[in-house]
Image (tube, rainbow, N blue to C red):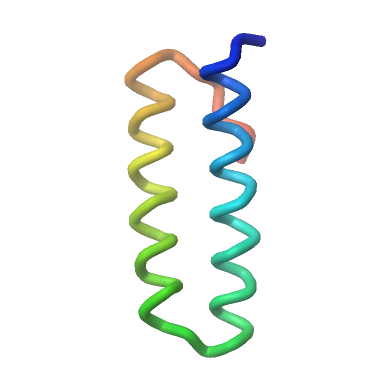
Length: 54
């Protein structure tokens, strides 16, 4: 596994955890921001042939 793949996976993991926390706290703005980041990371992964962990 390359560094790029590892970085994408780590950032997705952090974003999903942050999204769970934001939703639990009722922080809609942060949840929306993290959802957009997750979408961007998924798109980046797909564009570069990185298998998605989630």
